[in-house]
Image (cartoon, rainbow over all chains, first blue to last red; front, side):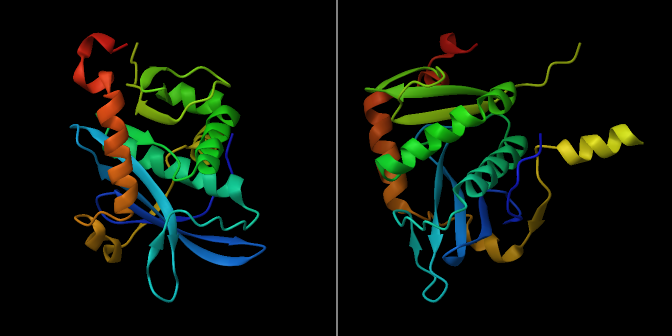
Length: 151
Length: 57
């Protein structure tokens, strides 16, 4: 299954990515960054818009550009690229708003079969981590690329 | 031949255009509020998968 997604541009280290969202409200530059957290090998997935004029970044804007599924698929593609380059890392993700966290959860649920085949997925609920259960409500997520098995 | 074409089409790791213009962000935290919030949340919940190997699958 190939998901429709935008073309990604990245820095050489594959930690910062950009793409252009094109939809009913126009064209918006989206930025994704995998940021080192306070625990080794744990990276935060940060995502937002870049203002075309000022260059300022904003992660709480709701663009409402009618392409959220394509945007989500593009973020997942960046995750695949990052995890392929840094296979020992875990990536932590939570939305900057509860609506965005819900969007992440919907994305994981929608593509659960695809993503869970390649990634271990954990969910955080009330300050406790557990293996992700399909459909359950979580405040944050963490994923880790499964090791390839050679038989 | 068909198999390799199919594999390329279904490849999950995307073709990515590399641009040196994005290298400048390597040592800059974009969205710093988001990183602060994530680290604060992590203080409460910890992260057993990297702190405690017994949780490894």
